[in-house]
Every structure is written in structure tokens, then in C-alpha cells.
Image (tube, rainbow, N blue to C red; front, side):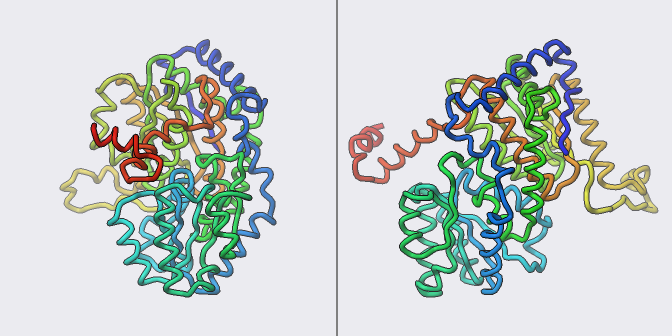
Length: 442
């Protein structure tokens, strides 16, 4: 399902070092499973896949069925951070690259509340005016600034266009089970509501209604996604060197200890761009604290070999790469012959495009190793809902283990509050007057 290749690290570490760090990762695994370390009140994701029942998924399917009967063709998902990145990653990975230009029986799923760009929201309204609209709003509190502003605008639009009673059937809330502004509003308005459990943080929530509901509404197989996550939960469930999550956590922390402070997640399929964005939030927010942490970055090759490739090959030697490869692709397209052969590429005649892509990947891995950049390989069988569900869970599990190896709490994010205080002060929120004066003087 997922295999880890450490051969690209062997020029930088011997078997003894790899075994030593594997032992440390096993200790991190035991800390995670023990549930006593800092952050242990946010471990609801850890064994979540095995607790997802058909009845839970039926609740999401009921929404999809009701909205299909209303001929809804645009679903606006409102959230920020983990409340949108997982769904965005899955939908982008599973969609046809040119889906917006093709006819589809499933609604188009778009996102709001992850930016304060006025142009973005105004242009979203342009789209909504041409479509039959519903919305999913995702927030534990209902007061996070970016999604709260977007929801105000979208809620008002839906109520004006369809009327208050009909609007209530077109808005779903994913929120706290008992408290918060959004929960209060959802109860008062009669919205269908799904719960984000208190013990699951946003960046670990892709396998909850936060991610699964939008993925389903976009037309994808969440039953298969959950099965993939369940199988990966089993594969990552032992305190052994065969556990792929332990292997990955061990290698990346070993390289970090050698001064490799930056990790680049590399893919060779543009459908994985938002998987990389989701991964960056997961690892950046989980590990970047207490003056520690591997800085997460990403590239999509071969495209970025013509932009970032020079730096990776010969720049500062403080980075390593984790390369995601997909063993099988769905389509079959080969290089044709050309009578004139002006480009000199007839030697490729009959070769599949994916063979060229795979050769580029292998060539790049070897070149970067020779350039002093360690390589970790992660291979999945194919890019489908089943394997994507497994990949999501694998990265979550490895992140929890890796954070404890690093010596941080991988489940809090105290640093994200700093900008909010300054923003509230600059916008004139009551109670922030003193800070506002300090900031204006700066």
C-alpha cells in the first residue's frame, strides 16, 4: 500500500545510524500510543478510521442525495487551514485535470473562508449568481475571522436568493457538538449539523466530516477512502521497524539531526499539488515550535526542475527531499514518431509518457544524491480514493510520532495566535485599544 525507500539516505548515514533513529521513532510511537504526553487530549484522529461505520457515512450520503434532488451544481465549502486543505487536496488529486471544462454530474466544489482577498470573494459571488448553490460551513467556534466573514456574505446571499426556509436546507454546519457561535446558529436555523470532536485538531481532520463530506459532494468514493485509511491504520499499528510511519519519522529526524533543516516534498503529478499544501500545514503547524522543526516545502516535477532544480542541485546543503511516486497511472499515452525528427526525440517513439516521467524522477533522485541532497522515497500503488485515504492517515501517524521524537507537542499551535491579536487591534476590535495604539505608533 505504502512503501518507504531509504536507499537515498545511505550515502549520508550507515545502518547503525538508521537503526538508532528507528529505535527513537519506536519510542515516539509508544509515547503517542500511551496517550500521556503533552497533546494527548487531541488524539481522536489516531484510531479514527477503525471507528468510522457505514451509519456515519450514511449521514453524509443523505446530504448528497437531498442536494442532488435539488439539482445543486455548486457547493461552497467555507473553512480555513485544516478545515479546507484536506478536502481540497483530495478533490484536486481525484479530479480530472480539466474537470471545470468538462460536463460532470457531480456539483462543483469551491472553497471560501481561507482568504481575506476581496477580489476572490467578489468573483465567487459572480460564480454563485450563475449556479444553483449550497454551502458547507466548517468551524468549531464560528468566530474565526476569515471563514466567519465569508459565511456572513454567503449565508446572506443564499437567504436572499432562496428565502430563509429554503436556505436552511442548503446550509450544512460542521462544528462543535455543544458550544460556539456556529453551533448556536445551526440549532436556531435548523441546519443539518455534523460534529467535529473536541479531541481532533483541524489539521488531523480530513477523515472526519470536515473532509469526507466535501469529498463525497464532489462525487468521490469515501467508502474506499475510509477503507484505505483503515488498512493503513493497521499497517501503522505496530511498534516495529516494519511500520512505514516509524520508518519515515526516523529518517526525517535523523537527517534533521545532521543539519538538514528543510524538507521538500516532491511529486511528479500535478494532481498532488494540494496534497503537498495539506502536508505542509500538517508538519509545519505540528513541529514548528520551541525553536525547533523541519521547514516543510514542496515542488512539482518535472515542472519545478526548471525553476527550483538549480537551487536543490547546488544551493545551500541544508535540505533533503521526500519523493512521492505513484506506481500505476490510469491512462495510456505514448510518444508518436515524427518523420522529420527535428526535435531529435524519435528515440522515444512508442515509449509511454509515464515511462519518461519515471525516468526523469529516477535521474533526478540520483543527481540530487550526488549533489548532497538525501532522498526518502514514498511509493503508493495508484492515485485513487483508497490509496489517498491511506496516504492521509500515514502522514498523520508519522507526524505524531515525529513530533514526539523531535521533543515538541505535535498537537498545539500557540504561534498562530500572534497575528490574530495584531489584526484585531488594527481593525478596531473592542478590548484591543491599547495594543492598537502601540501598533500604530510602530
